[in-house]
Image (cartoon, rainbow over all chains, first blue to last red; front, side):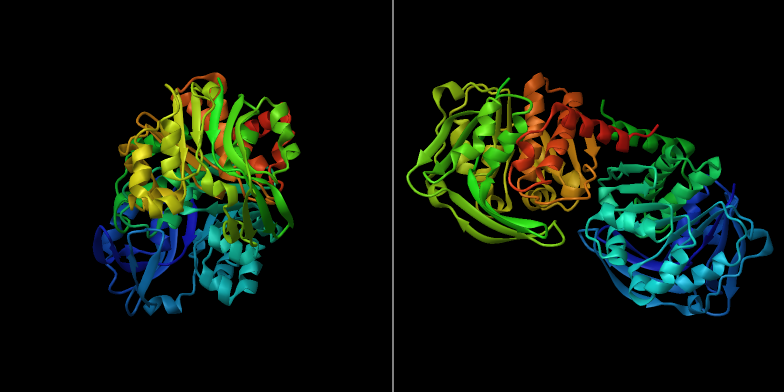
Length: 300
Length: 300
């Protein structure tokens, strides 16, 4: 089964204690697609400017990503600049130039509308709603968001969430949406808003998944070298939904495995700048991290 | 095999969003003993004042805890007051009255000296060292500490750590001792200081154990109602070492199971004020949480 992602496309300038990149490929749509494309064909809806170096995402085409929904608009691509300090859990945004992204109005090409797996990456809730109005009978709609939309359009966000099957949030977002400090209660409160499944990401502390019938918790993949955390959440979502789409099975057991593959893909994403580590992974590298996660979590 | 604990004995006054207690049984020695005594006989070294209500720890005697090392000194028992707010991860200390604890100088009764399993609870490093000078050929010495000693006597702390087999730290302590923000690297740095095994506690995010030959990570037990986090760490240590002492087997597989039982005992400790939830657990309650942790972490 194929996966549709609607999200941002960016050129990121990122500085970490380990180095620096300028105008590197970034944005939720590309991180997601880079991870998901190891599992399933990906259809991309995003907007870039005329300055975007398309050759740098050619690797996605080679893995069957569909770019017919990638709009190339007059003007410059969305640019984001950020700095990570010694403690990689904290970052400062140095600049945000929306550029063509400001005019983004997602248009699904006709052949995209029946895509069974849909990921609404972190964009304004009203744009996420526009996407939902264009898809036909999706099998799974999963939504991501950020503190900005929780602050500025919580009502709109809740309206979209009510129409989704699953929501991916980090711990802060879950607490902010619900006002509940206990993360498990917060996740259950989110289920009351509509989605049957809630996935909580906790960075270095792993993730858990909660639904009416299941609870599953997984530690993070143990990384000692982490070069650039940008895009970890979108790569996580890509591995997760890509795996579900590949098997087209939404049982709790498959959601568990999907969470593990999400964790694996996020662990690769942060090992190099931009989407670089996700350009050329072997099946063996992916499977070996999956097996390692079994090995470090198993007890009798 | 039996377990020796040397730590504090206190009367705690604790306020949380769910209620309040005044002068309730507390202190690392009693929390540890309450948890460990479900697995192995515990010998206690601690100091209380003449005002301590000994009848309130009678339940420990009924589970074979040995009080011959419990010194009753003229004066008042150590008192601590704390307030937890809505977010239980944060607490404010309202008062600390050391009272008789200020004069604590651990003296091991002769029949304690050959105890094979030794827990040095969070007391001044120089007192921990005094204990090590009194034990004979222990099979496992495990140490706990706190930010106060890391701030005021890091050199002394490192000297004791060099003589231990295992160290239990929370995430902040591990980072503070090593200056390393990456927790896994920090734990490895602690191994360089001497202990062969390092256990990192992360509260609601679970725990991991690292040694030269193994790495094992476990999420926390999923609790939606948490009444009083006081003593969680000592109960965790009690379950962990109690289990190891019971089986007298220090293989990596047994350390993994021990970490799970530590997690189980901590999950009970926080469900009521003081040591109350640990007074009267059934074997079945303990085993059922162990099995639940298998169920929520397993994937194929």
